[in-house]
Length: 239
Image (tube, rainbow, N blue to C red; front, side, top):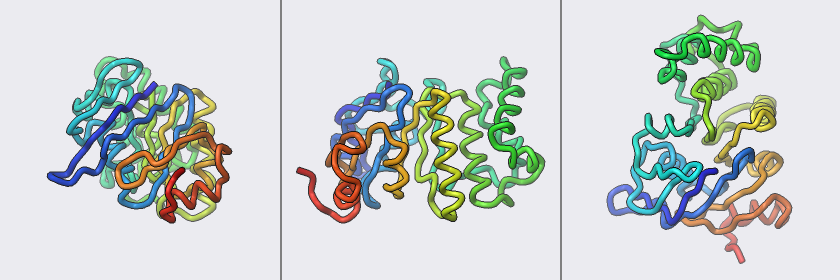
């Protein structure tokens, strides 16, 4: 389980997170909704070790990981699929996958190769493109690669930041099918997503962030979907 308590993360004098508290249970999809500037990406970066919080705590399965580096966060089972995919454009598809398993290559090479084969089974399009430079792939193909690369670390928690951003509707549906499939295989997912309709269809629990604070939390169905969207994106205050 991921536990975040009273988390404050700042950019200089500006606090982007102002005491965020939330949890993500094992085996569930936890969705973070909210308007641009709410602090969603800052939250993901703080958990993943990219940003160092000013105060508060982050723990995974009871182990404190607050303020550790990104490589150490990865060692504790936190993998991030960043916004805009951020694949290594000049590297091939397979080189990107190997990069995702860099911590395991020295001592677990056979298992890494097995996981690459599993990635190709999950994403057949990637196998056909395995020698192609990642920067030449379509947006949907790059998103598949970013997910597959993150899974190469065998994460406890897969964090996905705006996986549908900039993708055609048909590809968005495919991405959410992948999210459902991974979760059905036991992967715990923390999902930041602007497409609230799609996110609420897969979420076990959701949080609304507004100006760096949790404005509301609940399970889909606790309040109507239209009310969720109103609160998340149109500025209506939570009760």
